[in-house]
Amino acid sequence: MKIYVAPMAGITDYSFRKILEKFSPDLLFTEMVNAHLLATNDKTTEKELLKCDNFQNTGTQVFGSDEEEIVFSFQKLEKMGFKKINLNMGCPQPKIIKNGSGSALLPNTEFVEKILYRLKNILSDSTRISIKIRIGYKDFSNPEIYLNRANKYNLDFICVHGRTQKQMYSGTANWEIVEKLSKIPRNINFFGNGDLFEPTEIKRKTSSCNLDGIILSRGIIGNPWLIPQTREFLNIGKINTIQTFDETKSIVLEHLQNIAKHKGEMKAVLEINKFLRPYFHKFWDKNLDRDSEFAVIENFYDENLKTDIDKIILEKRIFEKIKMIKML
Image 1 (spheres, helix red, strand yellow):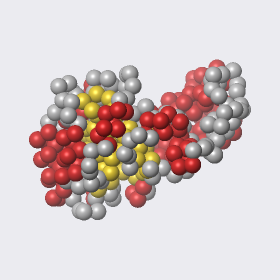
Image 2: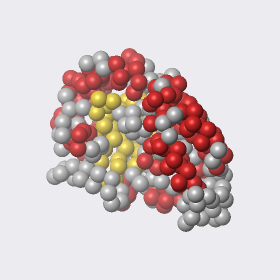
Image 3: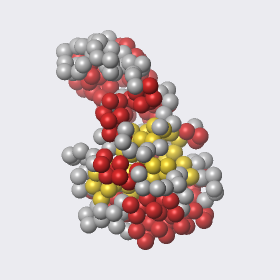
């Protein structure tokens, strides 16, 4: 089963993708990009969000609501070197759907059909198109129609997230619907997504599905170890890759230095903060089982670690921040 990492705004930038590459996902995505900004030659989008030196293993994702801008964006991304381009039909965020983008595209089946038809006739056969959807939006509750569209246009894959737009990220992803959809006859790849945080629960959610792969999203934030751990558990039923405290510090320092190199030190000391608690939280979680055969971290616990991390988050000088991380 293939393991992809989802496009996530503010998360899967170049600096974090360089970390993720070390853990060998089958495909990474850049942050999602705005079709309108691409069509108007926005430099931040082109130079920062789409910064890439590994087009073989990196895809990108477009969101938008204007047909011409979406088609133009796909053409532009193809010229830039991207060979795997996804149309975002799943983002539930209000600021995205208020403009008719993301999951707001789901009820507009004829509009999406026109876009897919044009893209398949304009882009090179070597440029692979895919779609990522949710199972519902307002009165729309027929995700099967997009599996049919994906088959009709021989897309690279369809990814289904088991929530409606209204749910946002609350409640739980409905993997029963994902399973049902995955068992409909098809000629394309089918990926599942939603609440994939730990190898054991990933296996439980996916074992009865007919999947070609999964797309990890929130579970990967500060946890690149999830990639090999999931692959191992799905393939051999045990976990050989164990997250250690020393390796975590090393990865965090490398991540911080990546951001500083590509965005500058001022951005680095702020942007790393959103990752610090996710990177380290397992080591202060006293309820985590560290001795079971399915343990994902070494047997290390520090009840004061959360306080130390909170102090590091407040530090705004990069050299002090680095020093404090090293001293953990």
